[in-house]
View 1 (cartoon, rainbow, N blue to C red):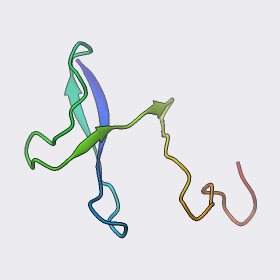
View 2: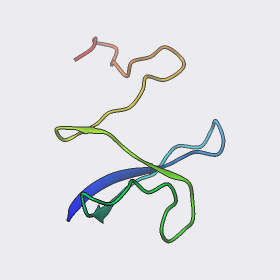
View 3: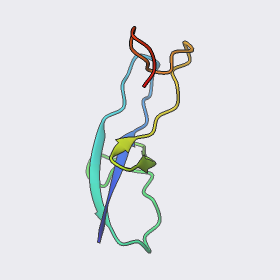
Length: 69
C-alpha cells in the first residue's frame, strides 16, 4: 500500500485547503470524496518531499522578499 497526499477542495475563495494522507493500493483510482467527512478532495502531486501547488492568482510564486529559491 502506498500513502498518497490529498487536499480538500475549498468551497470559497477565503478557505484554505487542508492536507492529509490516505493509504491506497496503486491499483485504486484517486478519491474525489473524503471517506469520513464526505468533503470534495483531490490527490496532490508530490515531487520528492514537497507539495507542488499552482502559483497564487495574485501573481506571487511563493518567493520570499530575498528572492526565489
